[in-house]
Length: 137
Image (cartoon, rainbow, N blue to C red; front, side):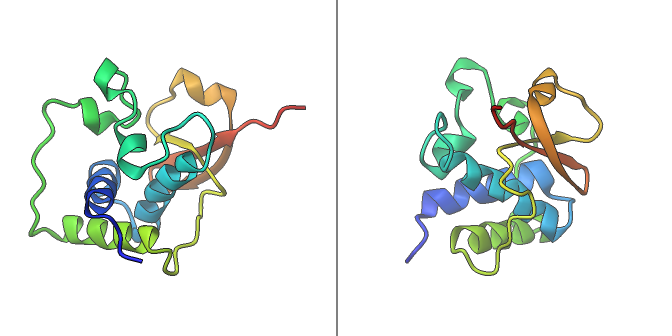
């Protein structure tokens, strides 16, 4: 099944801006959060929809979307090629293990957003902490 070009572009850009200098596992983890959101009620059901969710209201799910100072992608860089490869791997379901345990959220390890307190921590991969929704008891 061919991957829709806009899905690949959105996923690769998100992986690049969120985890360009992370390990390949870190890149896959960031990508899996997007896929996990697609499968979760309350999120858009497309790759680009999840990534740009809320941006029209200035409420960006991924910080790079609202960063007006972000640098353009150097498409000849190893970081871009690795991000693109990770996006292709995730979107084609080839050998892509979800190391996040189904995480729908993450943040960098040097910040503590308020929303993280309401979620269940599941993994630390490189510089990101990953979370799943808490189970209702």
